[in-house]
Length: 294
Image 1 (cartoon, rainbow, N blue to C red):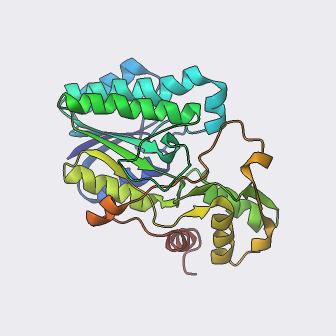
Image 2 (cartoon, rainbow, N blue to C red):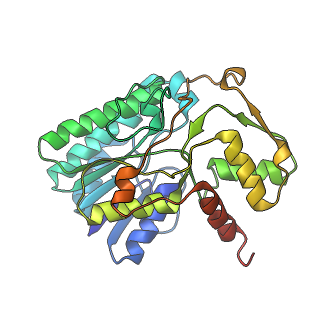
């Protein structure tokens, strides 16, 4: 299988690229702002370049791992949010369909309002932020393409953590603060299902190899709030969990509304034999990666 992975310098894209190449697939990866060896530059906002990349690589599948995930900044700039998180993904999906390639798109539990999570694939979306609305409208556009015969995967995930070259995910942020002995203030009423990145990437590759389509939740099994996740991280590393201070979302002044009881159910994924490991096991794997031999 020949893959074009847009956003291979990021967390999920990096894992997917490595797994695909290890499995013998011909995988081409791109980056936008953080150069890495073996990756070609391709920015999501460069529409003509996106379409040219599909034509040039002749992929069997295009996987979009890039996007604009800074939720509060999306609230400040809705035009960019819709351009990067909806319009350009749909343009790339149309280019993939025209080339006869499958298209995989990463979405989020932010397409839900957080009133009754965790959510399965058939739950009715109700986004409460610009970011969530842009992602949902991308999903809807992709399903319209699928109804016309395109092979599309909508892959919802949430709170992705694990080894990452750029060290940006929440686990790295929390680890830096706690290792320095600094207090970490995080919401204790925002629940999600933390998702170990390498497992999410492995499930993505398996779904592509099996020629699956439709909407799939790729997430871990544990429903945890951010403070509980940070305390679990402290426990795994032998740090002081008392440094983690949980606060209500309403007291944090976050610009964009967050789903409070979010997260994703993964019965469908587990039935397919593609589970994502739990939060503790994922954190232990991350620790082993960062401190080999421990």
